[in-house]
Image (tube, rainbow, N blue to C red; front, side, top):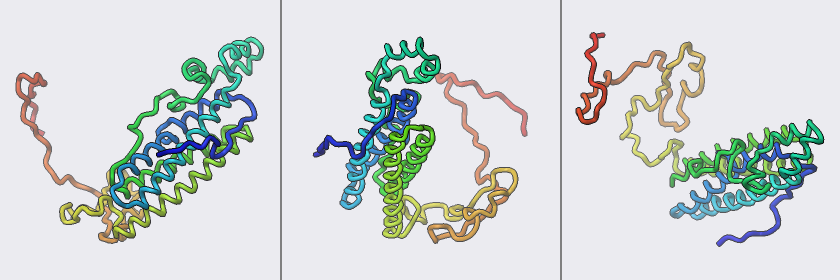
Length: 279
């Protein structure tokens, strides 16, 4: 069961209408790294947990909080759109060219489609899609995806904080940035615990190592001009999993021959093979 508490987790106030910034805020609501994405990602990861109740609770707790963040942003967007109806825009165009220019940057769907409300879409109108979310059933892989999502989300909200000059909007964004700080740290802690419990850092940790080609498992191939990356910790020393030594391969070579495919059947109507000179 879920319960909706009518009070917002944090206030969403604005000093004045700003339809252009409302359009920008749609990114962190309905974009790839927005609040809808993380809410759905954590929820579906949590729904699918088999055993491991503490991790299920972790996912459901943070996922439920992300729903609260959706409501905060939806309210903030709606308040930024107050007094920006099409009629008022028309008046602004005639009354003040500067205001008209600002109104001209508004997302017209906010007035035409959503009735001056938020939408499940990003800042350029792409509708939110479940293609954005990851729920694999492997918690170590999923928690790393969650850390990436929180990192990208905090980055985008921080950029928006710098764009707006509305002190009340900044205050709301500062709360969301702080909560993304907490969530990043929480996913890092959960990742470290899983790595410690499973005594490995490579996903999936349960795949038998002897089934993979161990002779190439720690190679770094230099496939670009120069050797600027040769001294990095990814090319030398003990690998993070502690089970191998990185090897820098300055001039990698192919392990297989050139691929040669037989002609397709005639009824497929591929281009017939052309006899070419030997290389």
